[in-house]
Length: 422
Image (tube, rainbow, N blue to C red):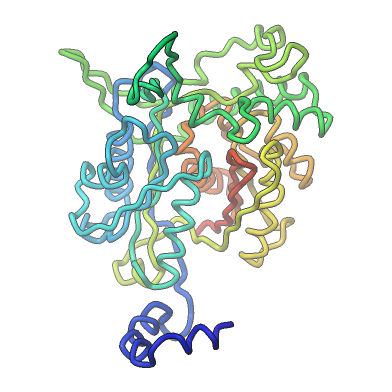
């Protein structure tokens, strides 16, 4: 088929285009570039309507980018590409990644792209950034993601064509574009209920997991294990200025009430407001670089990206998609599962972590050891990047060498990445 197709194109077309083809696939010495993480920064994670709710999402992202570039010890001009995840862009304004890059002071020449892979957006941004560097297209890339779930607007869907008769309805953009399965038109929590039933995971197990997650986050905060990754956010309202320094969600929990909470999605269900992730505001950013470039600049990378992978299955089964994506990432990295020291699997719901650990045989004491989406919160466009950075913090704090981060996403998918602490 290729032979037939080429015969239809004049030879001179290939002659003139040849230099572009060779340039696109040329890699120094015929080898792909190693990709390292030079720095990571994130904002605190705020509650819905909480401490960060008045800050636009792109401003949160620009704050994370500024901090990551500063921690890397490089000039803004060194960054030639910015890849930023964001799920619900309605009302954010044109080109969210570009907005964040400009607000952060990156150059006008920086190539910017916004990525939407639902909850995996921030991680997919990192994966695309790594690909860009491996192929020699860029030396230094900022990758990350953000979400200000507090600022997602309501939609008036028929307002453009007009309402001729009857009542209109406001549609919650947060539910419509962030939290509703597009295929069965139900809340993602129904998928979590399906997962719990299919894998025989009880309400008690989920509640116990959630309580442990809150305790882990409280301990990590108390010990200062998040301080290396969090950048303060200054919030100004009129004459009042507040500096937000810590994550907000974990402080709002009453353990005594967790067992008595009513299920959210079905009367006989197991998923509650306590054992599910929360609705949040936050942003994260990583500076990625070729190892060669980092050496030229005299920088000390914090981690190396060894491999990554994606997987898909039925939309209702999205909670266990990490169990398919993780083996793909491990094969890509050439690493055995038994060699992994610590794991991050995003807690869209407690049952996600429990089901995937069950399927893969992961020791819960090695999983989400600083807490996760249940206790920290889950700003959906941010979390994929956030868990990579937190995994680096875990490896540094706990003395591990190899780690895997994975995150499921609506539609039945998941992404996973393997890193090595340097």
